Length: 375
Image (cartoon, rainbow, N blue to C red):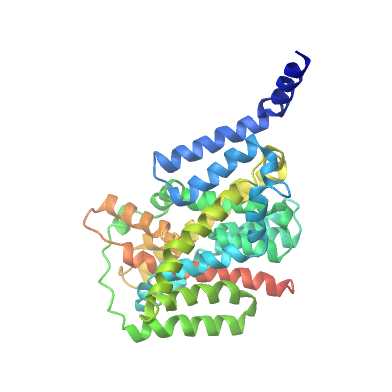
């Protein structure tokens, strides 16, 4: 009997029920809510599903992130900046830069949307974060998860890497919820109905030269951006050159999905109740939301200015796509435009600012690294 009682006692003591806190329960509820959004509502399920499942697991079994635990080794790939760079290669392999090449003015809208980053930077300084922490937090405003992880690790801010990554990826996934109210508030319906002229056809030579030229110029001006921009342009070169189809397919499919699984689950697993439910994390989450909202608003307002300057040839809705959430933000521009006029097709026009925003966020990250002397 003593053996049986000891065995049962050991089983009970090793179960999660004996160690689970109220905080863990709260985070499990949040994880289930994110799963609901991903599965039932279709909010970027490729991102939100692994993130929320990692969140669920770590709050049931915290040791899964401890040294020797499964997700610990996944997360090391984040800290070493390996997964963010591979994500960028996959994004490049999947992305058509034709709309940006056909309409270079899109770079202005992509740059405008970076305003949220600087708003969050100064906000973080006001809230008591040091300059490097503020820089790492502010990049959330670009709605670019890989760049957020990359900059935080390069600036040595691994202690707040988890909250930064979760906030960045969560806001990327929640673009369809966050952006539309801001767009409807700032852009009158008359301007939302504007139909843009068809983009010119971009030649194959232009598409091949673009990644080579951008990678070379940006890397020479800001060498610290070479890992991100270089990998993105390499992936795009795979896509456009036409002679390495197998590499393009691998980078944009199998490899991309493997990296998303590793990165998503490991990022989600940083959200244990002890690490996440504290004032510092809540400040980061709020700052990220403010930054994302400011970036969206700035893109819309600059879009309205460009609309006036061009005599109504640009629909300001595409300015909101200047954040880096590819292609979610472009789809939202299309959706909001279609609400005002179902015959309006803005998706390809919005892809220009969208991919410009990816480049812009990477450039801002490189600028921060250069300012702080980080190579």
